Image (cartoon, rainbow, N blue to C red; front, side, top):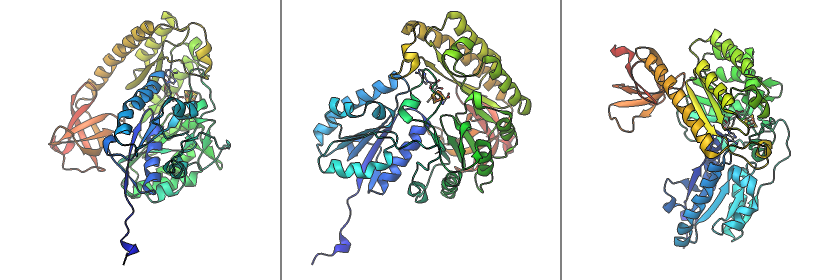
Length: 451
Ligand code: SAM
Ligand code: SF4
């Protein structure tokens, strides 16, 4: 006789390829969690997968092109295994929708940035042999818990460091940026829900949380603003470190600078995207600050925290950018001396104002400017890293070094990567170290107790 209790549900495997920013990484974690409830388990190998999802990014054309070449490569897997299902999510999916299905016969479903929690419904449809596109946005309210609680209440374990999205979308419409088109207008999650997710992360092993939003400092929900949210996060038991990205310079004020200087868990580190050192270009970018106000805000923060670690985003070759205007960006970089710069060649994006601006520059001009910027910043980082040698830092250990058997790796509060020799400490523990060597992109150290 058949024993129903012996019937086992077949485990299926999912591979997710993530492109782009931390917000997409967070969305990918959520997809895994949604799919775990549908009996899909994570695999690192595409060949093993029953389901492959590309979580896409369209911030620059290069990122978008990668998706189409990956879809081309996946064709052979679908031919070898016709049961394999392929889905495309994220910003390219939101932007292109149905067209992706029309142009790629191997794709089974396409879902937008508001639709990832509808994955179970979409999977049922595609398993019946249907092809499906879901890119409909929900009504934009200023406050909405766009992450369902079951995706964090049932978390089993999480990494030492975790991301936590507090807002999605953006109202700023910078002239170069596709985010308001792909992610819609800004929505904030309720503070209690954010705290509940943070508590769950901490209870499953997370020691550092980075709050995410396109413009985190404009967060506002149920009367709680961004600084008040940081204060509530700082009170969480067991959370050792707190960070956030990205604040917009126009909304960066003294209250936030004071929070960075005074809240114990909030790290002395700030990513403040500058984009350009020229006021004319900043105006054409619709950034709504000047280089002078940016300098003033950096000075205000450095007054409170002289050793604060600063990083930024820079775009070179914005339409109409002259040699002199590019030189102003270089001058700003020399003056501010950032610890880290993410630099990009301007890439025209569909649906953005700058795409229609006159004066688009050639690839060779953009490449030349990018090279100058990287060389300038490279020299600054070498000098800054060299100055770290002999200084003492607190490091949060993330795990074993992938090449050196006698070392572990982690980050300083300033977010600098460090490898530490002869440490008996485990992932998730804090250690005080002395920096012994500066490499190009990382630091080496030994425990302070050995010195
Ligand atoms: N919300 C953040 C802010 O206000 O700066 C930025 C988010 S965006 C995902 C990350 C960075 O990508 C931007 O700061 C900008 O430097 C870069 N970026 C955005 N659109 C771009 C474009 N069309 N071309 C080149 N870089 C771009
Ligand atoms: Fe894009 Fe500007 Fe919004 Fe940042 S603030 S996401 S750059 S529109």
